Amino acid sequence: MKYLALITLFFVVACQQPKETKIDEDKLGFIDADLDSDETNFKMKADFNVNKPAAGNTIERAFENAPPMIPHTTTGFFPIKMDNNICLSCHMPDKVKESGAREISKTHFQSWRPDLKEEGGKYSNPDNSKVFVKKMDELNNAYFHCSQCHVPQANVTINIENLFTREFRETFGIKESDLKEKVNEGIN
Image (cartoon, rainbow, N blue to C red; front, side, top):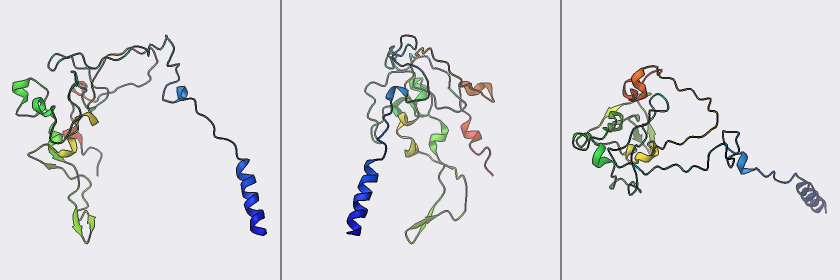
C-alpha cells in the first residue's frame, strides 16, 4: 500500500511539471534580426557556382590564418572521397604550375599528432611532446576532405550590423597564411 501511494504521488508531481517551452526558430542564431524582412535582404540567394576554375576573384581572408575560400564552382566535385578528390588535380604542388591554381598549404603535408606508442592495448605519449610535427611526402589523409575547411565564396550583401573586426598582425596575412611558421606560438 505504501508503494502504491508513492507511485501515485510521483505521477501527480510529474504531471504538474511545467510543459516544454517552445522555442521560436526565428529567434535562434547570433543575430537579432527579422530574417523575413525586406530590410535585412536575406531573400537574395547566394550564387556559389558561377565562376569556372581560374576565372574567379578571391575574397580576402576573414581572419588571420583563416582557410582561403573557394573562388570557383564546385559543381560535380562532391562527394569528396579519399580515392576521388578532384581538388587535388589542380592544387597539388606538382600541378599548380600547369593549372595556375593556388598550391595546397605545406601544413597539409605534415602530421601534427603526437607519436603514440601502443602497449597492452593502451596508447601513450612517452616523449610527452605537446606538438609533434612530422613532415610527410604525401598529403596527410586528415586533410583529404577539402570542404571541411574551405567553402565556396559568394558576395552577399546583408544589411545587419556586424561588430566583428578582423585584425592581422602582418599585412600579408590578408592574402596568405603564415600558420606553418606560427603553429608553435604560445606553446611552452
